[in-house]
Length: 157
Image (cartoon, rainbow, N blue to C red; front, side, top):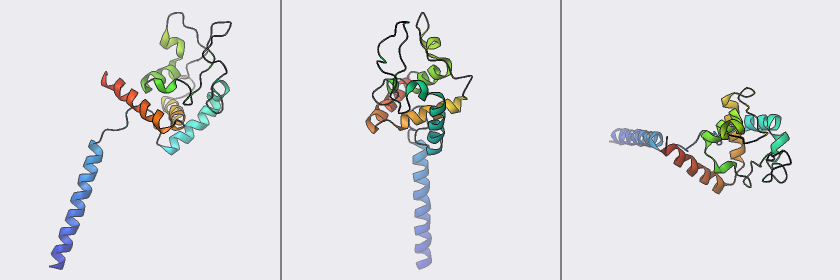
């Protein structure tokens, strides 16, 4: 009887584990492209940010002063990428396009921007890592809101 009981317990554990695994596979993934929960990619993104982005957007993601006011030549200073900025207001696909192609290419028309595209400098995975680093610094509520923005954007694809 003990052997049958142990077999039954083992079977129940296996069935429960399989059910949990299937449930995890069927659960909705976090919407978006940025691997902000992957510590290795975030660390890589932090290094790439320091090397390629911090000179304009600030070492602490603080952006340039008066970033909402155009300068004498009509350019906006680099915005912050921390929670005080507007980066998190945009879905991942749009942010990836801006970083890859540059703001002028995305906005078009006569829009002027100093934000060059980095698609010839960084690979797509490297850009995603930089964005993962940026997102990993946001407060939980901002991350949740950004995930909702991504979910809404993917609903229209």
